[in-house]
Image (cartoon, rainbow, N blue to C red):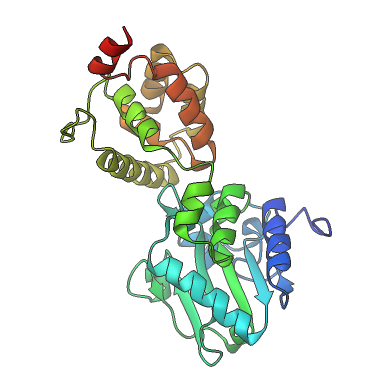
Length: 308
């Protein structure tokens, strides 16, 4: 395949997504990525501050300011129906592949599900567009989308390979169960429990009782971990005084209690908030390191006695 033709304006991650999709769909032609016009096809630094692709969603004010954040895929009628429908099913179900740290990785997609009516679904920032909610269908887009599928990336994620892998999985028709079984970034429930027990000094978070077998309700722990991650992500997206890189450094550079305490103090976060600050693309490595370092203190008393 060809090299990225415009690395100054197109991220390698978006270009790699195009190359994978080109191999997947025989009828597809690249309609465009970068274009010097209003909206996501242009790079943020070239747009006026009120442009909808930079003003309305906080995460669109993050990420590289010199890169385009949209792609147009021109396809056959059958392909347009297939891929628009796949995106619609995933968006309406809030498929976790379309979210990182609780934030959508795309703002909207525009295509057609029947080759007669243009269909647009907005995943976030719907109210400024007149949708009536943060997410939902947005009618009235132009008829060129009957033959090309437009995808607007949230600008924070234009250089995030994990985001592109997730989107490709949805487009390719891979089931969520298959993706969860094969994605190396998926966190094992036992690892989630170990992280929680570290954060709560070897105990359990408030309101989470041990199960009858003496373990923890891991599904509940996982749900709470995700909720904290979403809340902190929103905080990081709107607060310029919190240094996300400093938080991450405090987690991965040693992971001693002293370093963790210093990171918490510096960032002004709770221990649970510190865990949620780990971005998804580092989660696998961080979880492995955390589990390796805390496994001894995360063992149930009964298990410790058995090992002794």
